[in-house]
Image (tube, rainbow, N blue to C red):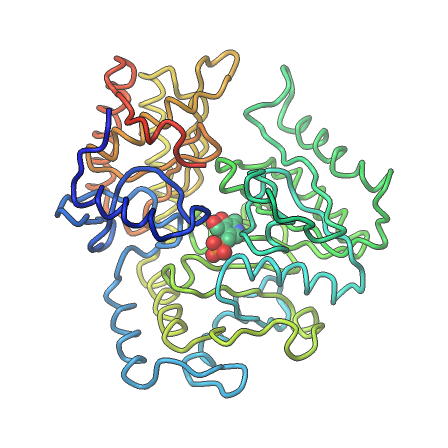
Length: 450
Ligand SMILES: Cc1ncc(COP(=O)(O)O)c(C=O)c1O
């Protein structure tokens, strides 16, 4: 089976001629002409329900009118000026707003960046500067971005680090707890304790605790399949950090800003991190990230150790301010929690009908639906995931997969119940097609995604 040679196919082909392969993640040939709310329209005018939300970078929906208006207003004033040299009213206002969102009750400060990747660099830099130590502990399965520090802290796809080493020194990876793949008979408590033992092992053997600067954790691991760790585990690691003067730094780039039904995902775990990185939805997928922490930690670096020409850009800052306003005024954190519960029930109904669904991990409008060949053995079924997202695309639903066999569910938090219901009706048809072996993948898609 081959492509149909639509305008979308042609544009994707042209794109492949000019864009470096490393920047292309092949799923299916969707070329977007416009997008509003939770609907994306392609270059041929076909409409799709967006269950990906630009990989969790569009929490308030596409082209929210308040964001568009705020940006236009700022563009009429001026587009940009390096805010490191001379600031502007919009960036100042956003700075105050973000500093107030820093974890903890004391005075917070913010450092702007332009991507989630550079925000991870900042987590490493501030952890080292604030403690005067060098080692960083992070997690197997983590995705933190693709600059050198972020790549070193991450560990979710070996292709990401092929041919480019050496990476950053003094970064150690520990396993991330996985409740679905627990040992037979293990309780959630047992899993928490087993993984905490694994976390401590390096400190007993080769990692001097007094030289450890920070632990960087996604409180819910996103790109490895929306993996939700035991609350007890997060608390054990957090307490260990505090007992040993280690910074506990969270990456909220994917899971923050209401995605999980709380404003930040760490709030599910009863802890208060020292450092927090946000990005993606902060300015509706425009280039902005921010690292938040106490004034003391954030002032540990000297001038120019972490500064960017476009950091805090006023047009992007206007978008971020409007985004934060919309999250509040449309009560999106609460909506995410309520609609997430509803979505979880709908996935459960699908699981009652279709055996390929092995695990449903949904918290807020945020889900990983793990597909398996057999519920007993839990053997992953990446082919099922590839076929299901392809047929969903054909039927007008955008969904991709994570870690090979996990369907990724991250629609805009503004999605209506009506659209959600329609998406689940389509998914029902799609799973039905899969179970009856009615989905044929184009050859180009057999090894798609990552
Ligand atoms: C958890 C997490 N951290 C960091 C990043 C990197 O962000 P960016 O692609 O903006 O550099 C991502 C991007 O997917 C992410 O999901």
